[in-house]
Length: 203
Image 1 (cartoon, one colour):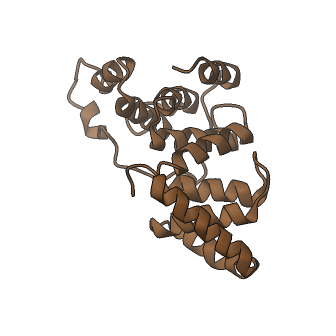
Image 2 (cartoon, one colour):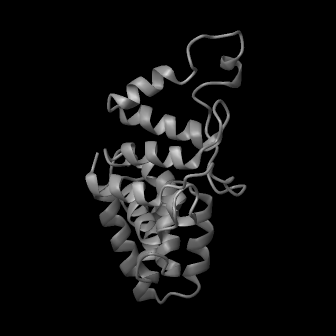
């Protein structure tokens, strides 16, 4: 794992159980293990298989472990623990983990708030084609949160998210289109096309 990122999380980690994520803050995904898996007197912990794979360096398993602790469906919710698993996966370039860790850092959930680190993670994920990250990174650019305010660049990433079907990005594109000049929109279009031509697996 990247030593700088690990060191950052060690400093930021909260010693108490993390508080709940606001409704709508994090996209709900299908649990990797259903609550029914906890029934029947199983002697093996329900996450044992995933944890072994995660500790072995499997980025997807690390992401899934993070989601388990984030959602709290089959284990007690612990956002500090979730952040650590997401960090391991994010360090391997797992775009879903990058956006989840970015969210926790942006709003100080389970770790101390760090808007700059959040924006950097959103950007990394966005450049791989993750539409949620594109919308979140665009928000950072629009507001100047953790990154220099840049409405043209924000519009470009909203465009990318919109092309990928992100509803939030779609609304933002319509809103910003009313305030930007034609020159700004043209530059944003070029920027979005360049990113899209070099982005990851989602294109």
